[in-house]
Image 1 (cartoon, one colour):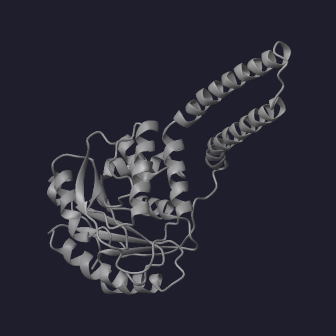
Image 2 (cartoon, one colour; image 1 turned 30 degrees about the horizontal axis):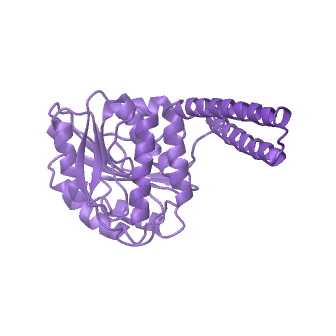
Length: 322
């Protein structure tokens, strides 16, 4: 069957694209297929599912090829030659989607496919971007509280309003997706970028399940990098906060130097003076190093954009021809 969308002006029947990045998910894919396709078939609308294999080292690509062979009319597979990260995997699919409504979903089944209709209801109600937030999270206490802290920092440093920035289950209108693709963003956090382009965003609570199998592909370091991208990509607040902090430190250090000088010259008290000055010096050096690192983060982002290097390489695309 040739995959082709029909044209409709009814939001509840708009063509639908499901975007799923895949990295070493061979244990989860069979269950994902078994649960996802019945949900989509029951919607009574045209749809496509785009899987991006992000350089998996296991049998993920073999399972994706088998699924394409079984459902070639609605299944498309983008196969990267290497691992470029979840962001690039999603962007590659965004650049090729055919639907007017696009939903992103993780392959680990922590976001149940059965929750997709909730997001579609919000799109049908007129929202152009719908973010999911996880109800009764099944993550460890560390990840849960770390997420809360990160959400707090993002709320205070950017204008992006999201209850749960770590939830992958989200719906986008085609206009928002086109704006994301045109932006040419390299390391920008996609949900935040979508929020900045949306004119009528909304959020909806979705169920959260334990990971069906395997372990999370997001290390603590990757989570830190993700949030660096989010904060530095949407705000200059870190630089401004650092400038104010550095100014206060400099003023305080100057006052302390005056106090020590007064004590030495007029009170002839040089007790611990040298060690105090060393302490001040080391503190100011540490502040300087933090500032250099922060500035380097922004300069590095600029460098990545200016060099205009190819962001990813697609080895193969499996899809039915239009």
